[in-house]
Structure formats: C-alpha cells, structure tokens
Amino acid sequence: MSEVIFPERLSIAWLGEQYRSNRLTPREVIEEIIRRSARDTDMNIWITPPSIEWLEPYLEGLQSLDPEQAPLWGVPFAIKDNIDLAGTPTTAACPEYAYTPDEHASVVGRLIAAGGIPVGKSNLDQFATGLVGTRSPHGETHNSLKPELISGGSSGGSAVAVARGQAAFSLGTDTAGSGRVPAALNRLVGYKPSLGAWPTRGVVPACASLDCVTVFATGLEDALAVDRVARGIDYEDPWSRDIQRSNNRLPEALLLPKRTPEFYGPYADLYEQAWKKAVFSLEKLGIPVRYIDTTLFAEAAAVLYDGPMVAERWADLGGFVESHPDTVFPVTETILRSGASPKYTASSVFQAMHKLQQLKLEVGGLMKNAVLVMPTCGGTWSRDQVRENPIATNSDMGRYTNHCNLLDLSAVAVPAGEAGSDLPFGITFFALADSEELICGAAELLNPKSTQPASVPAPAPPPSNQTVGEGNVLLAVCGLHMRGFPLEAQMLSCGASFLREVTTAAQYRMVRLEGATPKPGLLKVLRGGDSLSLEVWTMPSTSFGTFVASIPAPLGIGRITLMDGSEVSGFLCESYAAESAEDITSSGGWRQAVRG
Image (cartoon, rainbow, N blue to C red; front, side, top):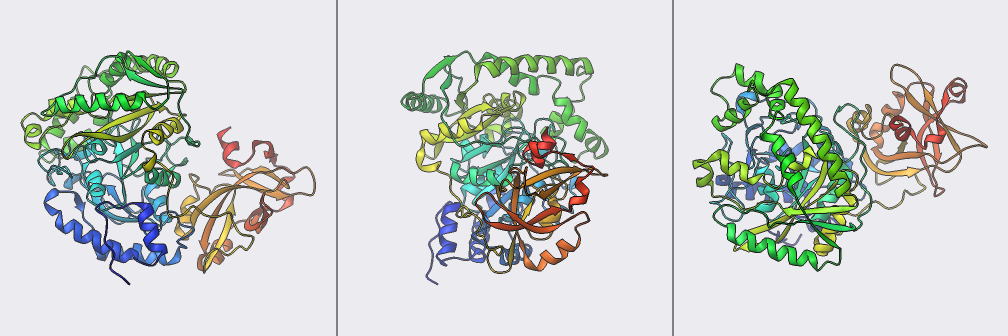
C-alpha cells in the first residue's frame, strides 16, 4: 500500500475515497489521529484522548458492517465530554462528578451503528457553562490557529479536534451558542439543529429545555451527512421532537441588522471590516435583503442569563455543587449559584415564559420563509484577557448567539472570510424550527464548494436480493424497532444499521395492536390495500436468527414488497389479530399514527 499524505483537516468524503480505493484502512487513520493527539497534547483538546487499546472494539466492529451501506463507515468523530459513550467516563469537565454510563447517548449510538468511530472525549467549559473554552480543570483549550487566543466554548475541545485533524467531525452541545462560537473561531461549520430534532438523552443537562446536540465539521456537506444519521425522534427522550429537514431551498429574504452590530475585543476593528465585506457578499447573492431592527432578538437573549432561566441549571446541578464544596471551577460555581438567587421566583419564571411566547410570535411572523444573518461572534479575546475578566468577556461572546434556542430557531455558523491572518470570521444563518432547509440553502449559495451533500456514498436503492454485503440481511421494520422508538436499542445491540426510509407497494393494511405498549401490525391484502412507510435496516446474518426467535406472536418475519417491486424480509402480522384491532392504514405508517 502506497504512503498516503493526510490533509491537515479530515473530511468524510476524503476518507470515503481513500477507503474505497484501498489506499487507507480505518486502523491507519486512527494511528495518525493518535500521533496528532500526542503532537497537540499542550493544547488541552482531550479529557479522554484517542488510544488504540480502547478503540480496538470499534475497529473490530467495522468488520460486520458493509462500507457501502454504513454511511459513516470508518469515520472518526470526537464527543464532547458531557455526552455519554458507554463504558467511558462522562465527566462534564468535573472529575468529582464523573460517572461511567452503560449505554451510549442516543445520538452517539446512531453514529456508531452507521460506522462512525468515537475517538475520544473532548474538553469543555465545565458543565457546559461558558463560551470561551477556558473554564476547565483539564486546562484551557487553545485556539487551533492562534494558540494565545480562546478556542471558544463550551465545546472548544470538540471544535479544535476537528480543526487540528484529529476527527472528521465532532459532537458538541449548544444552549447559548456553544455549538457555533467555537466553529467561528476555528474556521469550521457549526450546525445546530432545531430543538429536539436530535435526541439529548444521555447528555448532561445545562438547561435541559434549551439544550441541543450539535456537530462541528470542515464543511456543511459533512455536517448534513451526520444530520441524516443523528436526526429522528427518540420516544424515551422527553425533549425529543419529530422535526424533519427538507431538501435545501433558498429563503425569500435575508434579514440583516439595520444598525451595524457592536464589535469588541482586541480585533474589533478587523471584525467590523470583515462583517461589512460579508454583508457585501450577501447582497450580491440575488436574494432580497431586508434590514430590520434586531431589538427583539436582544430582548430574548437577555432572558437567558439576566432572567430566571439560569435557575434551570441550578435545578439540575445545585445538589451536586452543595454536596461537593470546593470541587467546581470557581467561575463556574459563581455562575451556577446565580440561579439560586431568591429574586428568581416561580412568578418570575412564568413572566419570562410569557415574554418569550410573545417574542416567538413576533419572530415567527418576521422570519416566515426568511433567514436572519448575524455575526457568529463580534470579536474574540486572548486567553490572558479572559482570565483577567472571565464574566464580561464570556458575556460578549454570546451577544449574537444567546437568543437562538430561547426563540426555537435552527442555525448554522459558517466561515465568511478572514478578519486577519489566522483570524477567521464567521456568520450565522438562523431560521424557524420547521425551516432548516432555508439556512442550508443560503449557506450553499454563499459557499457552494462546501455545501454539496456528501458522505461515504449514499446507499443505492435496495436490491431484490435480501442479502446486502457478505453476511448481512436487509430487514424492513414498521413500528417499535424504528429509529426513535423503544426497540431501536434492540436493533443496535444486534449490530443493525439504518439504511433508508421506504414505502411498500399498495398492497398492505396496518392495524394498532393494543397491549402494555401499543404496536402496529402490517398485513398484506388482496384488495383495499395502500402504501405504508417503513424503515430498511441491514443486520448481520449471525444476529438475524436470534432476533427472529425473539419476536412475539402475532408478529413474524415474512417477505414485504416495496414500491419499486423489490422484496425484503420484514415484520408481518397474522390476520387473526386484525379482527378486533383498529385499522390505521390511512395514517400512512406507524410514525405518522403516533404523531397523530
């Protein structure tokens, strides 16, 4: 095998090309990542760094997956250390808080099932409280381009891992901007899906009602490849929502601030110049531009840290802080304890909720079919400056990010030129929760080279033969085994991987089978049938027999005809069970029936 020169930053598409041409193996990629991790030890990127010993099971697990059917096969990714990886401590950057989970966080499990390799747990501002990347007992994460500057936070380690070529993408979290600020400061894309679109089960809460899992990547094409795997409701997650992302399309208007945003820090003038250049580029895109008063977004942002919402953090973490004196990072403890202030009463919480509801109504009308554009950051700071003034500098970093989750917006932070040498500038596109395709369309138009959907190639339509790759079987599931439902975990434990959503031929009925947990029954009929939505997974044949044996009557595995005429193995129901069951065929499928 000829020697491969690794790029400074990895991408899913590049890795896929190397794997398909047999120029690289996942093991060789991991070995290079470990070398890079050792090179960058002083940058404080990792809490649990890459290690061949604990990555060995994930490398071995790839052998049971068909690379052509696992969209993230062999792709290394980093996990912010407030997100669970089974068997590896979750610390939230507080060693005394650490616990070792038995299960992956929902999103992590989906990525691994799709072939992703979790290479390590990354450093963060303790308890995800901060936007600077300096509030960790594991050291201040350095900026990937100028080490004297902040990395951004709280997901700083995740961003720098990608920027330094130690992961192709990484998971962060975002409550007030933590999935976007580090992207801007390290010349990355930071994609923040709508609240609940990606499950947060298995994530240490910052403000549970506002938390999102996010992705950092070198381009939007990689971020969207991850989104296709991670997105989907999890019925065991009370914050999860069924929010689908449609194909990219352009907004009817770009909304820009009427007044020039305020800039701050030692590079304020350079940032302002970069913003003006970005606005010029946006005006040339051919999308109508409207200049608006952004006061209502600032009002929403103020609710987060100047209002009673800070009490939510104390509700989740106050017990730990009180019972573990002198263990929490000092500035973090100060911020957390602010949530215990007696001024935050039940009445003040409801007042804030009512204000936010009014603001959401106004924003909904303003942003219908439109995209708001703001600087991701109004500047940056040196790590020394943040150390000298930790509260005010951190507050500045959230000026143009804090409003997002409070107003139930989706967002993507993208590079938008340079403010100076090794000083990237970024902007963020915002859209309503049900309009994520607009931010993707706008980003695609601004920078088409980095926004074409790409991954280790998208699966081809399912063949009529049920075997996919050596030792794998196609299996259609129509109910509780689908993504986001209670028995998805059973599929993952069998080594199964989601492939695609499909539709049956118009020959089927679906009924609701009552029980402790209601479930669907799919029946093939001679007349009066319809097309119903299913999911197709691939499962190792070594697990298939045991899986089938576990299926209770009246369900079983038979042959299902798809809309294209092909057949796959899948769940069917014995006809006797339908006699007294509710017919739900008109819903179009179980997911739609549950959604109502």
